[in-house]
Image 1 (cartoon, helix red, strand yellow):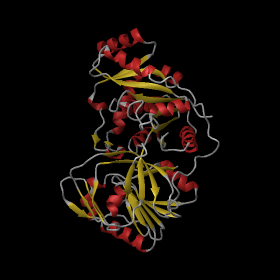
Image 2 (cartoon, helix red, strand yellow):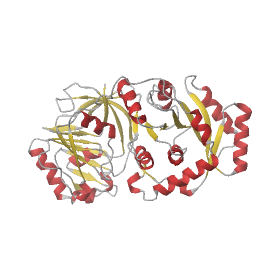
Image 3 (tube, helix red, strand yellow):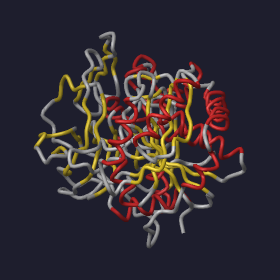
Image 4 (spheres, helix red, strand yellow):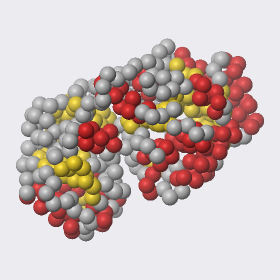
Length: 437
């Protein structure tokens, strides 16, 4: 049976879900609780923050992209050997795909989990009551069990907010966090600056925990947590098949967007995984039969990557020896011929795909996708359908007429045309594959 759980959700993005979640995780850890965590939706950044506090992997749960057996299996994996689970929602509570799938509300309704609502109150007074009342009434199958106000000016501001909510609802107001510079996590174009790049993250988490202990009713939050109403019948399936028997995986600040659950599934399937750092000019090991370049921030390190000769030559050598070389998003950009940075400077990349990409004049590409593979690959036979996600600001500025990687629809079922490309056993696209349909 899974442990009791509670999900931190918000009225909108930027409300402070992550810092509150980190504070809760650390405060519970201080109490001696074995605490696990999960993140709702397709997010490669926030889970690393959780892991820094808990010392264990934070798994992603996505009701749009994942088969039920995948989602429930991962939920149970997140709670294994834990006394309590804390989930962090995605965007606003009800935000997801156009049909509502993928939202935090969709997940908590499916698993019957309680919601702790975070409301950013910096510019709110009595109007906070109308907002909270609306969130309580919006869906009958979503159980909001308490509210926490964030970025509150002080005790008198909090008293005004609490009294306004009490006058309109019976929802417990479980505390508040102040406006404080030490609680603001730095951001960049794809979200928070990565945990590995923030040496002061432990101090921020500790400060958040101090405030949680001082200003939130932590005892009541623990009592409000409850187990999920659904259980897995077995281990989670393999969402993406192993790319080979020995897979070399790029891993550093430029290539960090990979789900630990996918790597764990590859290991369960018998694959051997090794890791290398392109930023340290390391090459994939000799004798590997697959190389995986996940997404990340190569556009911030283009010059350094262009001068990483051992890395680039190693990619070319692996491809020449018949290894399957696969790149997602940032990895796809590096497999191309040129990558142009934000300043408009173009750098030579691996040249394994006839693609040039650019981060100059960035434009957002965001949303769920359904790609159908165009040819037989280690990822599946031609016609295999995946659930995927796209989130990037770079764009293709040139692509020769090589065979496409996949044909793509969006979450509304609209045809988006071809995505990515492939040359022999080298393939990639801007898509992050999440699970098979």
